[in-house]
Length: 86
Image (cartoon, rainbow, N blue to C red; front, side):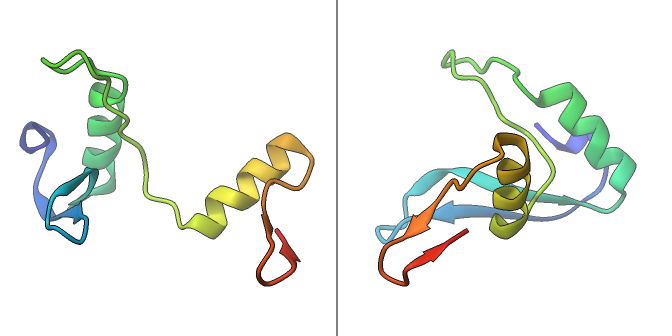
């Protein structure tokens, strides 16, 4: 699926405790332009099972949270155990 877009350096399929796929993976390309090409071509593509793919640039959780906070303009998450608001 991703090989037509360029050299793939690594693929990591996320698995649960039973070794079953969690339904997502990380694909690392050797060239960032090829990665962008794959995102443009494959994001929102319908699969044979009628599910849509989400293909995007990897972001750390902290980066995603920061962006969402900026977009929403309010607190998105409160960790009750640590009494911390992000």
